[in-house]
Image 1 (cartoon, one colour):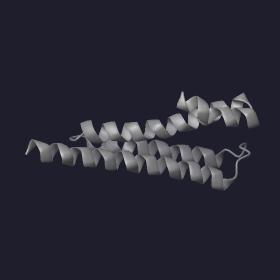
Image 2 (spheres, one colour):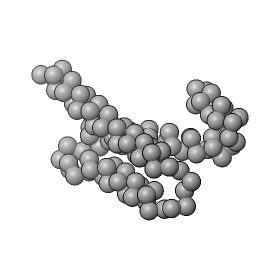
Image 3 (cartoon, one colour):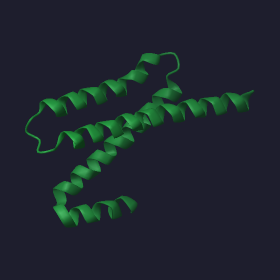
Amino acid sequence: MFHVLLVLPVMAAFGAAAGAVLVIMVALLCGAFLLELLLGLFCRTIRWLLWLPVLFGSLGLLLCLTAGAFPLTLAVILGFWGLFGFMLLCGWLAAWVLKKIYFWIRG
């Protein structure tokens, strides 16, 4: 229900397409956090998998910068991908903290 309340003002001001874009952008950010968290928790021996979401983010940034058809400014594009990187960092940090807590409890 909370996500509906977030999208309603955007839909009222800009239409249904803007609401759909907002939902996709939030889903990308949440997916980045969850993917980095899960990879950080369960892929201890395959450490290179932690760089996979970073690679996807840099590829997305490169695609956004090379596609000149978008009517977005450079600040909006860099802001979104900066937030994407921040969510990756938060997921990595949460996995690190959870591992430390697990090993502390386990003894």
